[in-house]
Image (cartoon, rainbow, N blue to C red; front, side):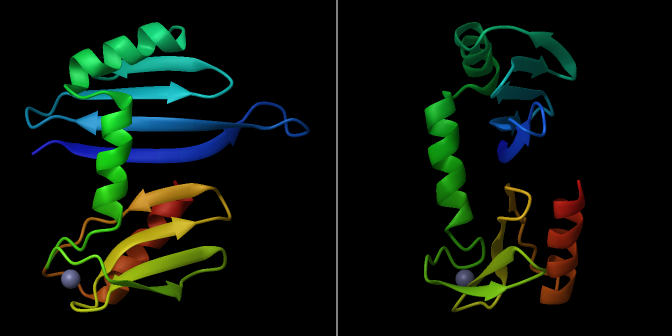
Length: 146
Ligand SMILES: [Zn+2]
């Protein structure tokens, strides 16, 4: 199965920061494509980065990811709001580390995703049956450090 990861952050001078979005798609074959758009645009295919304008980058992204940027974003949002265990969408919020919100499935009590406002980082936590909640919290914390 392909996986999608989306990160938001800021770049540019400290007095005039600019927000960016980075979407990474990893194909079943292990091939990866990552598009970055904000102050600058680039596309990275299997670790090789090229600076290019958004239009060209989005075409390269679609070719390698097999889906458009819009579809990747919608799919990611759906994954982030759907429990990987039961498919449920009934989540409860719980504060994590400062600036962090963890979303738990009400039925399974597992972390579905973690949202950090502090660093504008949005990390999807892979829910694994054998992981207990504290290790997921730890994984969320490590995700934020990146
Ligand atoms: Zn669930």
